View 1 (cartoon, rainbow, N blue to C red):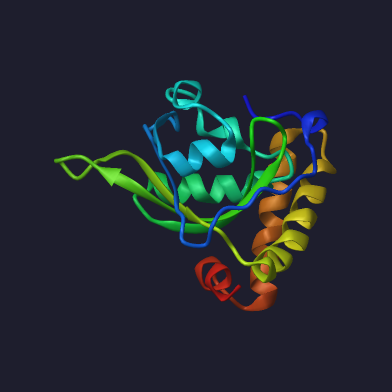
View 2: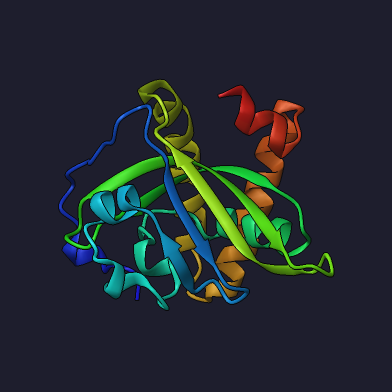
Length: 174
């Protein structure tokens, strides 16, 4: 279960620029592999994460529309790059730039998902954070979660259109 808002510490964790956080999931998003960097930064043991939904590290300040876009892309067998703020078990947070891809079986069918994450620069975090804050604020304007998700998705689409860029070009430009 994702971490609750009340348990957030406000403390940011970082990891070395040459380190990668790696995880793999099955088709339902349950963790099947987590490397040592993942375990160290998220403050979990392997036994605690294997078989758990990847959302175990979901930070409550992460806009749901970004995850919706991510899932749409990877379930269709496409890759995606996304900035994500995650939560460690104790309520600390850490930012990543995630590259998420589908993993394919011998029949070229999606069999699971693979994510490599690097540490973004402070400049990249400063650029994405106000956008995510606006998306989250839009999401929270609605009592109905689906309506909030739809509204934040529409806002994100409008933001990209206003900038005159597609999502991939936008993310890679930060």
